[in-house]
Amino acid sequence: MKHLAFIILICTTSLCLSSCKEENKTIKQVEVIFTKEGELTLYKGINDTIITKLDIEIAKTDQEVQTGLMYRKSMKTNQGMLFVFPQIRERSFYMKNTRIPLDLIFLDNSKTIVSFQENAKPFNEASLPSNSPAQFVLEVNAGFAEKWLLEVGDKMDYFELKTGE
Image 1 (cartoon, one colour):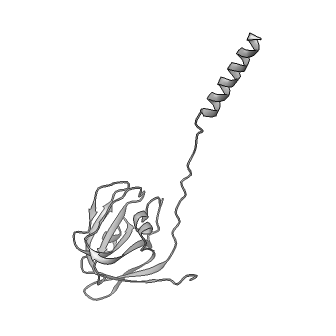
Image 2 (tube, one colour):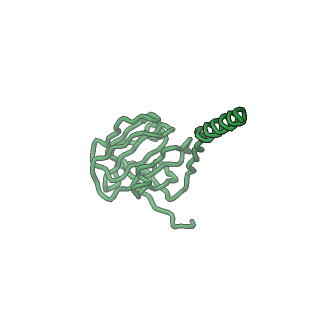
Image 3 (cartoon, rainbow, N blue to C red):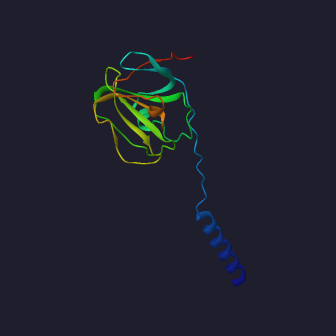
């Protein structure tokens, strides 16, 4: 009888320990895929000649603005994300959870470039301020501003695609 009680005690203890053990949970990171929501054109400020055109995602809601380009593994050279804010004011961004180096282009309410933050480093949480009031912020791959010789005073225009385009 003692032997049977001992076996039951061992089995019960073993069962408790195995059921209390934490399961190894793996969290799958879902890659966010680019969704074309509009088109953007950059112009030289002095003569309005076209510099280049981009396909863009547009961040307007609080959730879209807070997430931005976080968790992306890459972005094509002809793509970017345009942040559209309801008012003009000084802006500040950071690269938390952002895997790809970026250029941030700050534009005022007349869609004119007012400042840059070039070659922002992935995962860096340091503040990247606009240094001037901005209503729009364009995030593109690092090196974009230098490649296209963008300058303060250059302009942009964009349009949103209608759903289903």
